[in-house]
Amino acid sequence: NAGVTQTPKFRVLKTGQSMTLLCAQDMNHEYMYWYRQDPGMGLRLIHYSVGEGTTAKGEVPDGYNVSRLKKQNFLLGLESAAPSQTSVYFCASRTGLAGGSRETQYFGPGTRLLVL
Amino acid sequence: AQSVTQPDIHITVSEGASLELRCNYSYGATPYLFWYVQSPGQGLQLLLKYFSGDTLVQGIKGFEAEFKRSQSSFNLRKPSVHWSDAAEYFCAVGVRYTGTASKLTFGTGTRLQVTL
Image (cartoon, rainbow over all chains, first blue to last red; front, side, top):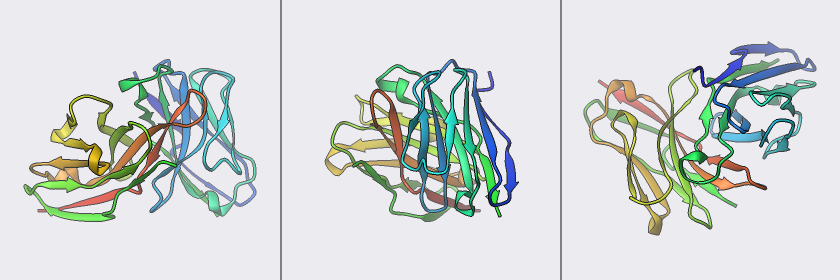
């Protein structure tokens, strides 16, 4: 049981390049999330999904797109990378049930992205 | 809007000393509260969580936290710190975002340094 995995672990991009970050979970969770972590700012929600085929915007969605074609995978895309997108990206997942411990999100190890 | 404040950016304690990390939240309803720990280069690991009931919750690695509604606080404590506790600690509040999805709002984190 691997939990939440993310690929790649680290990537360097040039401004204007595109890339896709992959998040996979094997816990049969309905909800999945993408966050970015920047120094002094904690984690901020980029996009999230409440189930296969659904996506929605979070707090800082500009410059990113997402897709959830399979329940276990949540992809984050950067169409034209900018230096402001240099960050550490975390994926998380949780069950679709409400209340109590079911609200706990489980995080992947992160992807460190540097945009030059 | 909900918010989480961790007033201490950086704390240094000696190994064996007690520890208290502060967390204050702002949220209109009863919150779900979490503490996560992030070791250097690693993802976020859940330390403990509060949903309801007993306001003193026990977590992993000997940590505990106390929910004080009157003070809107959820401070993390450990009676005797070990060198391996050096990490960054994040407090988070779970709130309803839109529809049925709940999201986590994070504090900016407290970096703990442990001296030998």
